[in-house]
Image (spheres, each protein chain N blue to C red):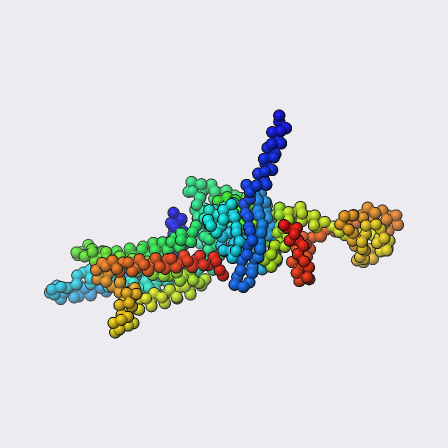
Length: 251
Length: 339
């Protein structure tokens, strides 16, 4: 109950500032541009594709690239959205309102996380509407589409959890943004390392945020991939709770 | 038959007040370290219902640290804090439900209106939705925010923001209200209003008030504690404080120059200190007041008595005496008095 109260206030805070609207507009514009380019390309190659035996369908050719691009844009955007969650409250002293209220640290962290997550899911919904609009004119592979949406939702959840944790580490929102961007980018490209080495390559590939997402985009729903994101989110939420507790213990 | 009943009920009320029935805050052996620096050491005190406890001390004495610990914002290094009988470390949620806290810097969301903010605070304190409106209206009325409900907090003046901060602390009518320097930065009229509000709060709640403004303590508080370098150096009721402030000197003013030797020879007079040609300060023992004898003597000699006033030791003097005691090598005799 208290989680929803805090989440509601967090969401309100986002929409009371121009930031949320601005982010929504920019993301929508960029993904719309990508969507048009993909549709255009698909129409150009449609005759060729029609002749091939196992040609990619509309969903593969249009939805997957859009989700893929969106995730990269989100890599930049989520740290900006998450940076204020705790850092700003610490800096302006409003955190003491939460700390002296009868709510637990877990409720505070979950509330803040949920608030941001709801915003990101609104954004995801708007993005998903674009490939979905193709259903008016053609037949879509809903399985693949759902898998892509789920993948992006999990990626956003992971981004938000990491961003929230980084926000608990500092009083400076910008520092939180830069460090969470660094962490996410590192985890995004970590699989580039050790690609030639058979011993480490699987580890790096497992750690990478990108690899698990890529398989979901291909439409292969693998429990291991979903579990990776769930573990990632839980880890960073627990770390955030611990961090807030520690803030009370020492200075 | 009526008399024994009365006696009996009186007896029970005494027993009740002696027991822990109305004990709101109990602090035992509180220590707080920041790395090696000890901000608060060996703090022990209690707060009962209907009391306004003034927490006084110079800057950096550990006032705010203590307030933060009491409100659960900071964990103590060692020691125990019971709020309404509930340990704040063992059951933080239950303990915190009994606390309203206004930090030095009011924790306000500037992008919300007063109504939105107070509703959020009420919800955070687990007030049921049905009681929310009434609680909000009451808090607004008590803090003089009646017409401010739809204003953005960011557009309010400092005084009004302070009031919103206090409204936030009392919205769930907690047993204990902790106010950290609530009148800082307000104009004199606002200060008077806030003080009146604090006195009003003290009737139903227990109030802990931290301040470094001395007259504030005298006008508002029922008990005074002075903290210095993390230690409690004074703990007494306001009546006890007034007794300490009682005079040990008289100010004598005459039209003609009074002779020092004559005054000094009077019984009960310890010392005479000339201030100028017409003024004398007459020191005496606390147990005897020679004002009458001095007046009679002055009249007898025809010096033209203009003024004879007992000089009160101000709270400021007591405060300065206590907080500079250890620099001058003085002991802390008040610690015994506190206990």
